[in-house]
Image 1 (cartoon, rainbow, N blue to C red):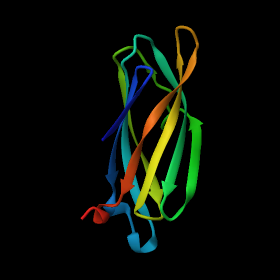
Image 2: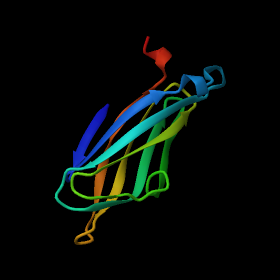
Image 3: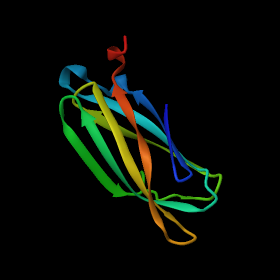
Length: 128
């Protein structure tokens, strides 16, 4: 698990290689990741957008941007958390991801960026 804290917002990520959905001989590697966003600040915040940088050993870096996370734009009161699971396909069994959540403080409308810490995508047979 990797963890980063920005402006009182903690982001932690756990990665799982999905061997049953992967086909290494066809250069298809599937990973899932669980993200937990915890509001450790004293203000209510909303996640508006996200931007991912995905690097694959077999190809050039990809940028993925969009509204919210898995169709939601969660509002987090102080002390609350939001978790979700998503996935990523790579052409190799080695890669990494990192990113930014674009958030807003609901009290004053100030927008701020929250770091999504870089995490490794490594197919399990590379770890043996």
